[in-house]
Length: 116
Image (cartoon, rainbow, N blue to C red):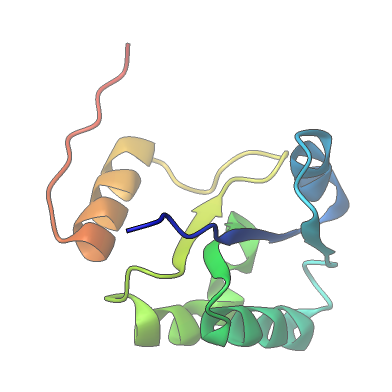
């Protein structure tokens, strides 16, 4: 079976998305975190139904905008939806526990993350 290429979508503020532009990603959506709730919801809803999308990367500060949408598809493996901290840092106190929970929720397996 031939592997199928999937696209990556990145959604966040200008500082967050610039990092992904530098590495060559094309599907970048720059939003204003405090103003563009409906825009973010629209982008995520459309991306979830698009079979060509394999990964949606959102700035962590946008999670509350799309939590209900993500909860509806959290047991599907495609697209994978991840939230990453913005340039101002993370609101997550225990990053290891957070990502362990994501792996468990998304993949159905327990993964233990340890620092170096």
